Amino acid sequence: MLRFKIKEMIAKKEFAENRRITISELAEATDIHRMTLSKMINHRGYNTGTENVDRLCAYFDCNVEDIIEYVPMPDSPERS
Image 1 (cartoon, one colour):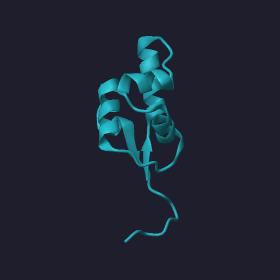
Image 2 (cartoon, one colour):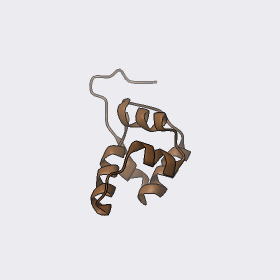
Image 3 (cartoon, helix red, strand yellow):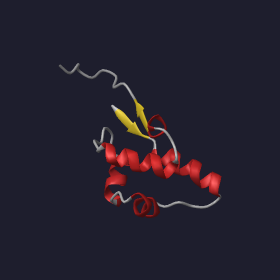
Image 4 (tube, helix red, strand yellow):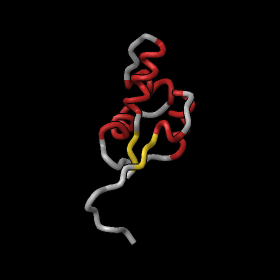
């Protein structure tokens, strides 16, 4: 399963810039709908397009692996 590390990236940026960053601000800056960001943050295994990942990487000035983490699912049946 892929896990989005958006909350962690927001926290890093807040610390670096010494200010609070809201989901609404992130949505406006990246042109990603606020509900999509919320789903990426809160729903396990949420599926989004690469365009959204690209926009987040541009906003946070980071690499893809800073935004997304692969987490193996324990005790899940193998997919074929």
